[in-house]
Image (tube, rainbow, N blue to C red; front, side, top):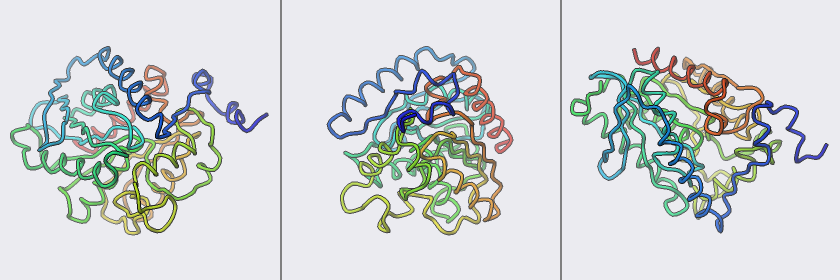
Length: 312
C-alpha cells in the first residue's frame, strides 16, 4: 500500500469518498481556492434551517460580525472565529455551526469576519477578534447579552484565535471569559508526529499546514523556529493556570491532532477543567464536509451541551 493511501483503512467509510480532497494553499492558487470555497459555503448557508435563531449583520467597530440570537436577553454570548487556515473563509464558512451553537447552546453567537492572510498577516486576525470581544463586552446591554457569561469558540485557525483570546482574558488583557470551545485547533507551528504522518489526508494535510503558517506569519518569522510568538501560536505559551475551562475536539487523521491533545493535557496539568474528545476515523473538517453525518451531529450535540453547561 502506498504512502498516499495508507490512511484509507483508518478513514471511516462515510468519509472515503473524500480521500482525494486536498486543501492547496499555494500562492498562485489561493484566489481560486477562496472563490470556490466562498461560493460553496454561500450556497450551503442558504439551505440552513435557522428556525428559532434571529440573525443580524453588524459591525464591531470596523470588523464585520454576524449575530445569531438563540435565547432571550440577557443571554450568554459566544465570540466565534471561523475556520480557513487564516487565509480562507468569511461569515458563511461556519454559518451552520453558528446556528447550531445558538440553538443548542441557548446563547447568542457573534461570528467574526476577521482579516485574512497573506494580505493581512499576523496579528491582523487576532486584533479583529479582540476588537469583537471588547465590543461585545462594552455593548452588552444594547446587544442583549450578559457580560458575565462570555465564551470564545473557533474551528481550526479560528480556534487559534479563540485560544489566544482565552489566554489574554486570563492575563487581564481582555474581558473575562468563562469557557473556550476549540474544534480541531491550530495551536503550534512546531513539528509533531501527526504533521509528519498525515501528509496526504483529506481536508487538510501536512504540506497545507506548513503553507498556512507561511501565509499567516508573513516575512521575518519562520515556521518551527523560536521567533514565533504566543500571540500567533498559543500552544507555545508556558503558563496556562487561570485560563477558562475548555472543550477540545479533534480528528484522529489530522495533522493538527497532536497539538490539540498536547494542549488539552497541559490545560489539565495547569488545573483547568478540560474535556478532550478525539473522533476516530475522521479527517480535518469532517463536520463541514458532511454535516448531516451522524458523527457530525454527535459533535454538534456535544458542543451544544458543553456550551449550555458552561454558560447556564
